[in-house]
Amino acid sequence: RGASKIGDLVLPLLGDFISGHIHPDLVESTSLSPIQAIDWVEDRLCGAIQFMLRHSGCKTVTLPCTYGNHGRDTPKPRIATAAKHNLEWLLYRHLEKYFKNEPRVKFKVETGAHSLLDIQGKMVRFHHGDLIRYQGGVMGIGVPVEKARNKWNQTIWADYDFFGHWHGFSQGDGWCGCNCLIGYNAFAQSIKATAKPPTQTLAIFDRKWQEPVLVRQVFCTTAVAA
Image (tube, rainbow, N blue to C red; front, side, top):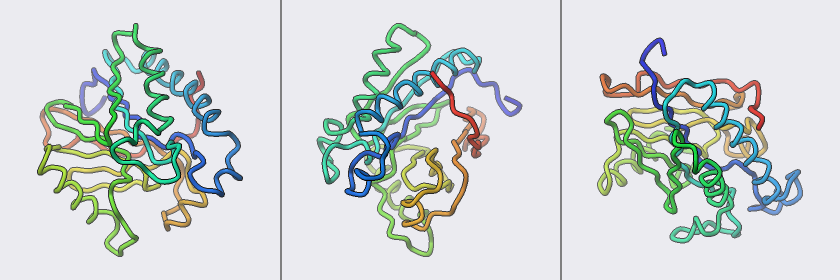
């Protein structure tokens, strides 16, 4: 707020709130089943949204929702019918119904991979990030992101992209890959991600600026309970 007057809050829910059972080892290692995990997450997201309403000082809270690859109930990812086979999509619908009588809260629950939202005159595309193909090249994730953005922008233009999935914070011209709350784990090690503490990403959009005024990581030391 030292940089800009903030009246509207956008809280993207970008998926992979649960580990799921998409690999055999996850069946052995997860402490909760996918359905139990979704139930656990729902309470905490409700608490987080209520916390924002009470303490953010914002007039509105908009939540663009995209599902991740870990919430699916199929061995392999679906494309056209992905939402029908994803527990996180059901989670978002539950949250939308829970806050249906709260006029300050607006959900954008998509059945497709992308959620587009106009923020201060800029079109922003939110997505999980698993449709970006990266095989560990020496140039990092930036080149695959730019290629994907170029192709998507030929159909529907977006000034900025926010996504997760890749277990690390990265940023380029017109895009930001957000770090994850799960922190460093066996999967992050397998994809050679840099070991960093769990963080969330904060961005401030202002009509006076071409790019977000501020994009930074916020280190997470506490959890918001319902």
